Image (cartoon, rainbow, N blue to C red):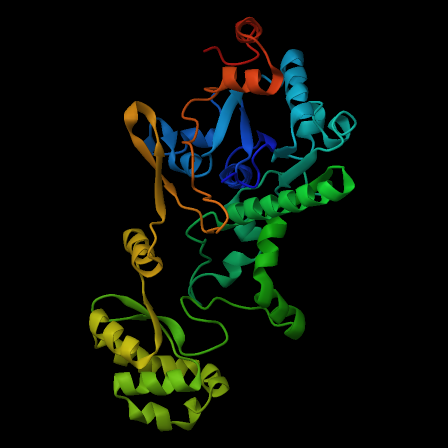
Length: 402
């Protein structure tokens, strides 16, 4: 069955992670995504590593499936003119340069909209387009520091800790994808495109959610709580005799069941732990008792007994264990393999969403392994160029030669 974005043309001026992740999600839904890359090495994340696979870094490979690559020398007059011709054919443009770059290249929204009034023009920046830091670059780690996340991540007495992934690059990419889909829907009614914008900083700060609301309500700055929940107890990762285990038993029935599993009836009678609010207030004393009790037992034993008692729990899995967990619990593989060079197949993470009306993972293609590898096909499909025109562009250094 046809995918929902089949026939939608996306010109992708993004690089690194937030923008490429957005356009990859559009490609997953069937859009024809053309990735515009620099003729001098392509997307910088191709070179981030080791490890490398087929000469490309892991982050690049994780965010660029379902795209075709075209290299363009945007600093040349002919290269910029060719880019504008492509933009005139596009339904969607996505870019994540600093806010002044696209206009300087003649590719700003105000410059392209008169010729293509239906264009959805999506921008991802570090700090937005207008503020005092708008021209400053930003990476996910920059934003984790500036946006407050490091102040609430890590052990209470320890140093600030970053998250284990570039979570807010990914969040910005998902926010931008959602904005593009909304703008495409509105275009069906209005007949016109629009500019949509998000930033890494905004995408991170909105994820503070309840933590920010707590501060706004109480004026008390939230602190770091390690691997424990900030507002209820017991709800944290405990060390067992042979590993680590998350136990969540803040509600009354769950706490009573945990007391029985650990054979600590005194906890159940202790007035300090009589209800959820008291347990949260006396968490230090509660965790002192639970830490000692849990550490005496092996993980498998606790998992078995907690499961039978109906207490929420989870092993602290490795990545390998997590992928197996998805297979076992979702009855679904979270890894897909797409055709690669020399008959080999490349791994990709599966879609997090399943649809009854179409197979989102059908006909997925590998990330472009070489910058500009689809030059001829893109120029034929989008601009109806013939081989001599394409050869002329390559000879003049406007596109990468074959």
